[in-house]
Length: 289
Image (cartoon, rainbow, N blue to C red):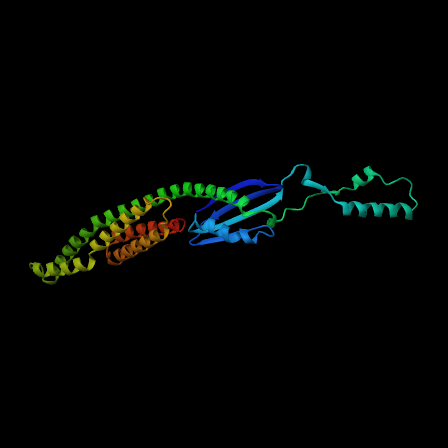
């Protein structure tokens, strides 16, 4: 799931900024951007992320700057000395009047620079860890809010599947009634209007009933939906994404089999709608941990 968290703080003369971003992904991938000298922090950062996320692409960025105040800027002595030498040479070579003074030097600009970014190896992990934890906690809070919205959407999809199951169960018996009537009419035409062999027609209908029966598929689909709901009721800290993905695969299998057995335009239309709901479920579940 997507999310963002940040935290700032200081350690001595060093200002620390931590940013954590996450986007959707089927597996956990952690990218870490560190200042020079901070490479030793990476394993600990990955461990902290792994304790809070099971899926998604997570980017962790840490920046260090001078803490500011009077020491934030410093005189670029090398530039000033080079400028003085150049101006002195210019005055002497061309016998120019006047003198090199402060206003003239200031007009040249670029004499102040920001102090060198503090080195990461000057900062201990104990100063950094609380900021990382704070940023990650903020990220988790945002992801949990998104998870609540996602859960509502998943439940709407599941309700759509339940309506589809009810519709199939309502339509399925009518196929046999129509087929029985069709067979009786066909036999009557072949026998010149004489009474059809009801027993034989009944046997044919029984064979079709067994061939077209989708009762087991619908029972299993309902069981998968019930298991799906139970997983959504799990505490937020429990990862359920992969198990939800498995149930969606099983739902697709049952609905696909129902479509293959349909032999009925109305049921086929319902199956298409159910497959669309399942595809939306599949897409959304990739965002669930």
